[in-house]
Image 1 (cartoon, rainbow, N blue to C red):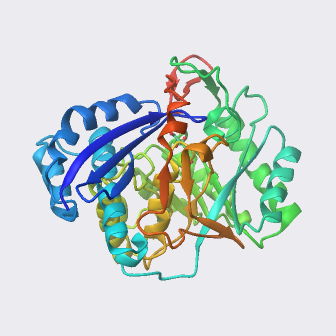
Image 2: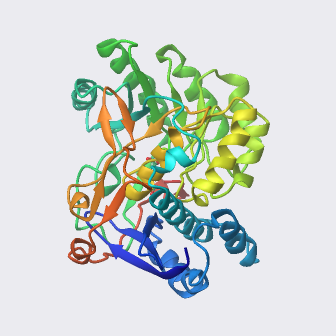
Length: 404
Ligand code: GCO
Ligand code: MG
């Protein structure tokens, strides 16, 4: 099963996606998501200029060895660009392995450990009333878990609400230069418990409630938030504080029983190790396409299982359907599965990516198609050329740069 070509497809059906397509001598093709939101072209170059030429002639079935070859062979370790590129190769090789065996990837990973993958959707609103309507929309569809974000009164923009980062709308105005937002921690800390209280008051406790803090608080502020949300029994608060200083999570832990989820900006098991082995978090949220692919994420999940940490993979709309399908294949098999984020994709993405995953009753299933179960229509992809885009940045009221 020699690899004869490795091509990179860049497309923007609503938002930018980078896809690696590997082809073997017997004509089997495999796909891997190589999208790194706002820094897409760096991974395109990493693949086209460095990894693709190395893949030609290699045996596509040597997935683990290829991973080590690319990881150790770079000499330079880890980092989001490297690990996203390696992830794309890894997922594409799993796709090929599944297609060669005539089986969905989850069967190669040991088979399904549950009937379906519990997912959570993103509800949001400019006001609490608008948010409540959106939560209702998810509950009506059968969702068992909903992430809620609403505009913080007094702030002009709030994370998770408008623009292409919500997955709901497409804003062609998003330019290469980042939008500048203003952040006010005390307005947020005042508002967050009111928001959760409104949600629980209206809908009760019969579904899981999640919230993303998006790295904006100090550890002590995160502890205050966690404590103030305890009456609303959150499934988790996500990224309450930036995770470079990992021991700071100990402080949050000492003050609150609200569960913590971290990891969407991590790129390797080494970024997760301290938080997991010290039991400083409850859910590890690394994504399959930014953390070295199925091969590496499986190791992260196994480490997490030893310490009672459950999985909660990142599934934002800036990860392509190929990434989402890869996550579902793995989610279905791991013993310590927690939940899977599902933000969905903007409408034009369905012209480009043909998926097999299904949703029923709050659960998703990757389907029975051999491999990952996603195809790409390259003609459709060519109709949506790359558009330079940036993630927003945040400043405090006095202009100081803050975490977005
Ligand atoms: C999430 C994430 C995303 C990120 C995005 C950055 O939990 O879904 O925080 O919304 O902001 O993936 O590219
Ligand atoms: Mg997040």
